[in-house]
Image (cartoon, rainbow, N blue to C red):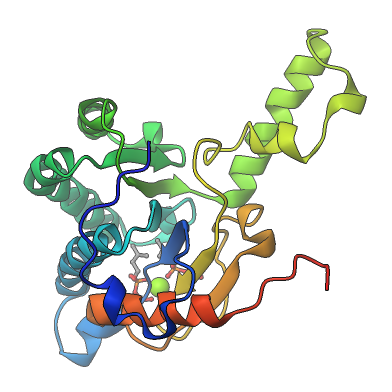
Length: 248
Ligand code: IPE
Ligand code: IPE
Ligand code: MG
């Protein structure tokens, strides 16, 4: 079922190492990018959307099966109301402007996180976008909206408790697979590479379970400046890593 579009960037990957199946990105640094230019933070977020467009295209061209982007965390509600509403506005604009291309390019759009807490019209837009690409069988673009890994794990724990209480499951049957099946990422490939931009060295509640054996890459580049070339470099660096999963 895996559809890989033409891959011109592949040849640009030095060493031609393994391509990660699933890449996730903590797209950080929009505010600092704007500040450096004496612009409002919104300008940084807009430039961030342009980077999203370029990087998702590049990921498809490279044959990455799944790309997960951290767009809004469950903690980002702590920001000023105006910024939160600007971010929601940009999400609306992105869906309006980019859904046609994603649908045409055979992309399957997914969302992880509790996006149903957003405004009803935005929830409807997101649901419509997911439904529109549901019949595709190409690369997955998963957007993390109101996502927090701890909340995701709490949700999985609750579902397991319900299953046990209802007699559908024995506690001894709870294993890693049972937890994974109840995470928002249950139908995504295992996470191979997790990138954070902007020089911060933390996960900020992103994919904590899934990152168990992912390769981590922290780059100084602020998200709006993160380019397809830098994605290719990250993929090349991944290809040079030796994964051992605790073995030898
Ligand atoms: C990341 O950029 C975008 C979101 C969190 C939505 P920031 O807005 O966090 O930018 P900095 O970290 O303030 O530079
Ligand atoms: C992480 O960035 C969330 C997103 C990129 C959506 P933050 O800017 O919110 O993270 P902290 O606050 O620096 O940890
Ligand atoms: Mg930040």
